[in-house]
Length: 257
Length: 263
Image: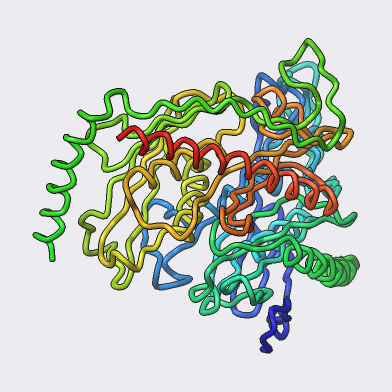
C-alpha cells in the first residue's frame, strides 16, 4: 500500500468468486466470496396480492442478516443496527437502479403478483459487506427461474406449470464499490475488516453500465473534496467492468445445463 | 468520576435556570434567506412559490426552548420542522463505553408510527456526521445523546434534521471542530436542479441528493441519494449545495450573534 492520497487497489478485491445455484430449495441463489467476506443470497418466490395503490406491481423484499457466526461483534437476537442499515441500503439499490421492473412480477393485475424474498446471509465478515451483498443479490437474481403461472377462467385459481421456467428480465447491473477514507488524504478500495475499523469514514458508490450512479452512500466520517470524489467515480467505473466480465463468464459456464 | 459528572450537570442546570429567566422567549430567529444561486434562469411562475431556479425556502431557528435537555433547537425550513434535544456529556452504560472518546447516540422519531428500518438508517447517517465533527476525545467515557422529533415533513427532511442537530449541539455547548449543515438537491427528468425541494417536488424528481457539508472548508461529510443520475450531475449538485451552504452558515452565525448579543 502506498501513500499519497491516491485511490489504491486493495491487491485483488480478494479473489472475487461467485457460485450460482448453491441452494437447491431456493428459486435462485448465489454465493459470493470477496476476499474473506462471504455472503450467500437465497431468493424465494411466493404469491401475494399486489398493493392497492399499484395493482400492476410485484414486490422485492430484501433482508440482510448478520448472524453471530460471521463475526464476534454480532449477538443473536433482533437485527442490530448494522444489519438494518445494510437491508435499507439493498432496498434502496433495488429501488433506485430499477434492476427488475416490478411490473414484470405481476401475474394478474389487482389479483396476483410475485413477491421475491431475498435473504442475504453473511457467513464470514471481513469488511465491505455492502459490496458483497450487492454482488450476491445481482448474481442470485440472474439465477432465479420463475415457473409460468396461468389463471384458469373456471376456477379463478392459479395454475403453476413447474416444467416451464423462465429467467427474470434483469435490466441493469448495479455494482457497488466501497472505499475507506483515512483523514481525507488516503482512500482504499475494498477495505478489509481491520481497515474499516481503523478508517475515519467510508464511501460506497453504486454504478450501473452507462456510468449512471444509483447510490452514493457516505454515512458521515471525515470530509471529502470534489476532486477526491471524482477519483472514486473513475475507480468505480473500472470495478464495474471487472465485475461484469466475471459475472458474464460464470453465466456462460452455467449455460450448458 | 461519576460524581464529578453528576456535579457538572447539576451546575449546568442551575446556570440554565438563570439563563432562561434573562432571555424570555429565547432567541427566535427569522432568517428570511431567499438566496438565488442561479443555475438555470429563474422564471417566476405563479403556480409554485419558487420558480425552476435555485432558492432555499424560508428558514427559522429557535434555541433553548426545552428545559430538560442540555441543549435544544427547533429548525424550520419552509413547512418542514424538526425539534432536536441534546443530552450530554452524561453518564454512559458500561457496555457502550468507549475508553478514549464520547459515545454519540442519535434517536430519530418519525411523526407517526414506530421507528423502523429507514429511521435506523437515517440515525446512522446523522450519528456518523456528528461523530466526525464533535470533539469526543475531550469527554471520554461519557455519552452525548441527540434526540430528534419530526414535527412536520414537507420535503428535505434529512437536511432539516441535520440542521436542527447542529443547532442543538451548539446550544448544549458540546465542543465541535466545525459546524455542519444539510442541503437537499432534486433533479427532475430534464436535468433541472432544485435546491431544498418540497415534498411534491421530491416525489416528481428523478433523483434526490442530500449532502452534509462542513463549515470550514465546505467538504462533503455525508451524502445519501435516491434515484439515477450521472457523474456530471453529481458534481453540479455538489457545487450548488456548497454555494447554498454558505447561506445556511451565515444564518447560523447571525442567529447565534443575535442570541448572545441580547445580554
